[in-house]
Image (cartoon, rainbow, N blue to C red; front, side, top):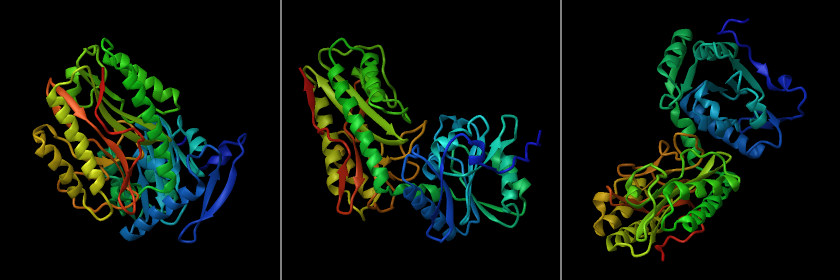
Length: 422
């Protein structure tokens, strides 16, 4: 048995002799011929993955990086196509400057690489290994363990203190620098293929939302309505989401990020929905609130304030305005309507590739106060203006949007309006 730090770089195809792949080399912007394994299970076209490779390589060049270590599951999926909920164990991609990436993956999970990804090289991590030591050994095999500037994802959930200290100790002549923003910035602007995938998710959300409306009748519990929403999502081909649907009835509608419950809808009541769907890990989300019977006047005013806030933001958003300005425009509406103290959240957050524990990309960019960056065409956001009043109501109306060259457009086809079921 090899020592834990001595895991050789392997050829994926040699481990999958009974499976036929198309071996391809695609020219990158730098002229490098990138080896790729092509198959019908890739989520996107080879050209899309080469585009992403080029965007990342250009940023690495600007930052003077010799290599980049990818650790977040969203970033790994974005770069390679690889997909697994097993990211709770070690996964890492070493991306050399203008070179072929190497996927460092748990031995139990490596079979997912040829199933989903285009990369041709991997190194296995066994459950008894010290995973960061395997990575430092791979860097050595690639000639990247001395005198190199290596980018790491210091702001990632998965890049641990132990991993950083191990790399610094075992590659003492390297410089390890925070390069979290390389993948964040790459993912911020969506391509046409990514947008189309999000449209598929949005269409599924619309179906689940309408099913939730239909199931919302007096006497039905939030758990029962939530079951209908989930059944619709999965029956329609949806994947597991980064967060569950938030489906809340009555006074429990005020609870952030909660779902279901045994409490039943009353004759005159509130039903709150915030639903996402995922296609190839690409997410769209939608929030709506409906009313049964005779809703209170305050509920209707809060609903209209949230609807108007979303409308104001949609009419304002275009390339060149700042995130701060977009948030301020929407917040001014809810404040003027008298609900400013209950509108506690940011206007919105980037949305795209997602894994639990989140369905958003808010770490990349958010529509919020004190965010000075300007919006650009191709950015996508989920905007959920809502009002939460403890033990009385939670009321909100959201949209997932695409920033276009001249403004923005909605992904959902459902109207943004007050619905009262008699």
